[in-house]
Length: 143
Figure 1 (cartoon, rainbow, N blue to C red):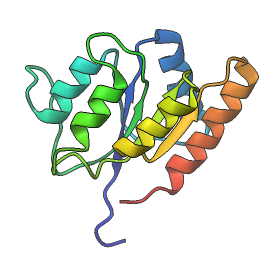
Figure 2: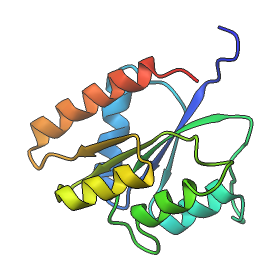
Figure 3: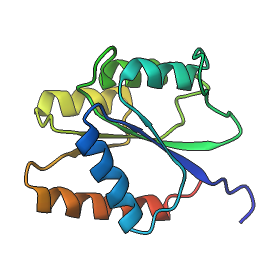
Protein backbone atom coordinates (compact mmCIF):
# COMPACT_ATOMS: atom_id res chain seq x y z
CA UNK A 1 0.00 0.00 0.00
CA UNK A 2 1.58 3.27 -1.12
CA UNK A 3 2.23 5.74 1.66
CA UNK A 4 1.61 3.21 4.45
CA UNK A 5 3.78 3.64 7.52
CA UNK A 6 4.25 1.11 10.29
CA UNK A 7 2.88 2.80 13.37
CA UNK A 8 4.68 2.95 16.69
CA UNK A 9 2.43 2.74 19.74
CA UNK A 10 3.21 5.09 22.60
CA UNK A 11 1.80 4.13 25.99
CA UNK A 12 1.77 6.89 28.60
CA UNK A 13 0.78 5.16 31.85
CA UNK A 14 2.29 5.67 35.29
CA UNK A 15 0.86 2.45 36.79
CA UNK A 16 3.27 -0.40 35.98
CA UNK A 17 0.53 -3.01 36.27
CA UNK A 18 -1.81 -1.18 33.91
CA UNK A 19 1.01 -0.55 31.44
CA UNK A 20 1.89 -4.24 31.37
CA UNK A 21 -1.78 -5.24 30.97
CA UNK A 22 -2.16 -2.82 28.06
CA UNK A 23 0.96 -4.15 26.37
CA UNK A 24 -0.07 -7.79 26.92
CA UNK A 25 -3.61 -7.08 25.73
CA UNK A 26 -2.34 -5.54 22.51
CA UNK A 27 0.08 -8.41 21.91
CA UNK A 28 -2.59 -11.04 22.61
CA UNK A 29 -4.76 -9.35 19.99
CA UNK A 30 -2.02 -9.84 17.42
CA UNK A 31 -0.53 -6.35 17.53
CA UNK A 32 3.20 -6.64 16.87
CA UNK A 33 4.01 -2.95 16.45
CA UNK A 34 6.87 -1.41 18.37
CA UNK A 35 5.66 -0.12 21.74
CA UNK A 36 7.34 2.64 23.74
CA UNK A 37 6.15 3.25 27.29
CA UNK A 38 6.39 6.44 29.33
CA UNK A 39 5.63 6.56 33.05
CA UNK A 40 5.04 10.31 33.28
CA UNK A 41 3.80 13.10 31.06
CA UNK A 42 7.01 15.09 31.16
CA UNK A 43 9.12 12.29 29.63
CA UNK A 44 6.43 11.76 27.00
CA UNK A 45 6.41 15.47 26.16
CA UNK A 46 10.20 15.58 25.83
CA UNK A 47 10.02 12.60 23.43
CA UNK A 48 7.24 14.14 21.34
CA UNK A 49 8.61 17.67 21.23
CA UNK A 50 12.20 16.63 20.61
CA UNK A 51 13.46 18.36 23.75
CA UNK A 52 14.53 15.20 25.55
CA UNK A 53 18.05 14.09 26.26
CA UNK A 54 17.11 10.45 25.68
CA UNK A 55 15.19 9.01 22.74
CA UNK A 56 13.16 11.51 20.71
CA UNK A 57 10.43 11.07 18.13
CA UNK A 58 11.44 10.09 14.61
CA UNK A 59 9.39 12.48 12.46
CA UNK A 60 9.37 10.02 9.55
CA UNK A 61 7.37 7.47 11.61
CA UNK A 62 3.65 7.27 12.36
CA UNK A 63 2.51 7.11 15.99
CA UNK A 64 -0.56 6.25 18.01
CA UNK A 65 -0.69 7.51 21.60
CA UNK A 66 -2.54 5.71 24.40
CA UNK A 67 -2.65 8.41 27.06
CA UNK A 68 -3.59 8.19 30.73
CA UNK A 69 -4.88 11.37 32.36
CA UNK A 70 -3.58 11.04 35.90
CA UNK A 71 0.21 10.96 35.60
CA UNK A 72 3.03 12.58 37.57
CA UNK A 73 5.07 15.59 36.43
CA UNK A 74 2.61 16.49 33.63
CA UNK A 75 -0.89 15.08 33.34
CA UNK A 76 -2.35 13.65 30.15
CA UNK A 77 -4.69 16.59 29.59
CA UNK A 78 -1.73 18.99 29.52
CA UNK A 79 0.15 16.72 27.08
CA UNK A 80 -2.95 16.55 24.85
CA UNK A 81 -3.39 20.32 24.98
CA UNK A 82 0.23 20.93 24.00
CA UNK A 83 0.14 18.35 21.21
CA UNK A 84 -2.94 19.74 19.52
CA UNK A 85 -1.46 23.24 19.34
CA UNK A 86 1.61 22.12 17.39
CA UNK A 87 1.46 21.44 13.66
CA UNK A 88 4.03 18.65 13.91
CA UNK A 89 2.08 16.80 16.63
CA UNK A 90 -1.61 17.53 16.15
CA UNK A 91 -2.14 14.75 13.60
CA UNK A 92 -0.97 11.99 15.97
CA UNK A 93 -4.09 10.04 17.00
CA UNK A 94 -4.65 10.13 20.76
CA UNK A 95 -6.68 7.57 22.69
CA UNK A 96 -7.34 8.57 26.25
CA UNK A 97 -7.22 5.35 28.28
CA UNK A 98 -7.97 6.26 31.87
CA UNK A 99 -9.98 5.47 34.98
CA UNK A 100 -11.55 8.94 34.93
CA UNK A 101 -15.15 8.75 33.73
CA UNK A 102 -16.31 12.24 34.72
CA UNK A 103 -18.47 13.44 31.78
CA UNK A 104 -16.93 16.94 32.00
CA UNK A 105 -13.42 15.46 31.70
CA UNK A 106 -14.50 13.31 28.74
CA UNK A 107 -16.02 16.34 26.99
CA UNK A 108 -12.97 18.46 27.76
CA UNK A 109 -10.61 15.87 26.23
CA UNK A 110 -12.71 15.63 23.07
CA UNK A 111 -12.74 19.43 22.78
CA UNK A 112 -8.95 19.44 23.09
CA UNK A 113 -8.71 16.95 20.23
CA UNK A 114 -8.52 13.41 21.55
CA UNK A 115 -9.77 10.88 19.02
CA UNK A 116 -11.15 8.24 21.39
CA UNK A 117 -11.83 8.24 25.13
CA UNK A 118 -11.85 4.83 26.81
CA UNK A 119 -12.55 4.36 30.50
CA UNK A 120 -10.55 1.54 32.06
CA UNK A 121 -12.97 -0.87 33.74
CA UNK A 122 -12.18 -1.72 37.36
CA UNK A 123 -13.02 -5.40 36.79
CA UNK A 124 -10.00 -7.30 35.41
CA UNK A 125 -12.07 -9.39 32.99
CA UNK A 126 -13.74 -6.33 31.49
CA UNK A 127 -10.38 -4.53 31.31
CA UNK A 128 -8.88 -7.49 29.42
CA UNK A 129 -11.83 -7.47 26.99
CA UNK A 130 -11.46 -3.71 26.48
CA UNK A 131 -7.78 -4.20 25.66
CA UNK A 132 -8.58 -7.00 23.23
CA UNK A 133 -10.98 -4.70 21.38
CA UNK A 134 -8.40 -1.93 21.46
CA UNK A 135 -5.87 -4.32 19.92
CA UNK A 136 -8.28 -5.23 17.14
CA UNK A 137 -8.86 -1.53 16.47
CA UNK A 138 -5.13 -0.82 16.37
CA UNK A 139 -4.64 -3.58 13.79
CA UNK A 140 -6.98 -1.90 11.31
CA UNK A 141 -5.64 1.64 11.70
CA UNK A 142 -3.50 2.59 8.70
CA UNK A 143 -1.47 5.75 8.14
